[in-house]
Length: 267
Image (cartoon, rainbow, N blue to C red; front, side, top):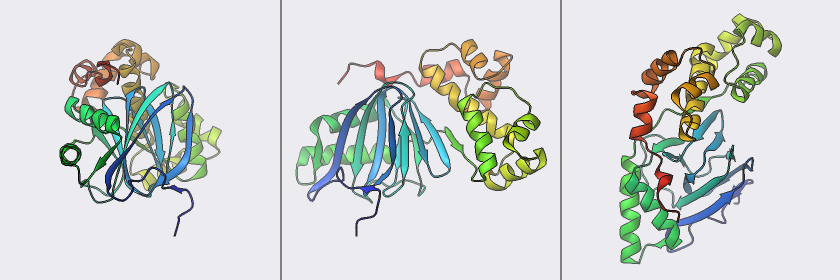
């Protein structure tokens, strides 16, 4: 039975292990909520994608890709122009540690495997070359490390309104009490909602929002100082320390380690 909202046009057809899609999106474009019947890897060789699935939001720069299991409803917004490359796998081909979506680090080799797969267009199980490419891609996807760029969202309507206000402008430094008043709930109630639904306090949640936004800005070429001020830090040193605690390295070291893969030749 065809599930409403599940798009099967791009799913691998009989005899095909992996199907692909390459698409160029303009700045501000929004892909409405949908799902696929296949497991999906979405990757932007250029640009940053903002992906929402359930109660979570991710910003995905070219150093990362998002793994989306089959029949997972999601929507995508392009803050700027995006060159997207997508792989669709028969469910069960790729083994991932967890059952949900995951942000995966993209190594230079994995990037080239994705690009080559998209260039071919589809990988047939009976073609030795294409089967080898499929197996190598699956191997590296299974080994890919996850990245902490997820931002969970509350379901309470008032808390969600506050969360969306912060997502819209992470640099705002309004006290939480004022934000709560604007959302129509008390400070104590808001803190309870965040702790109950997200397992964290509001300040920690807002810090994660700012750090995720920082990745987008750093990828675009902003300096550490520019990024710190843009996301609401008064002192760049405080931003550097918060980034180091979250990602295990300073912003400068992170940028060097995750040098933009899209700097290679266009395909």
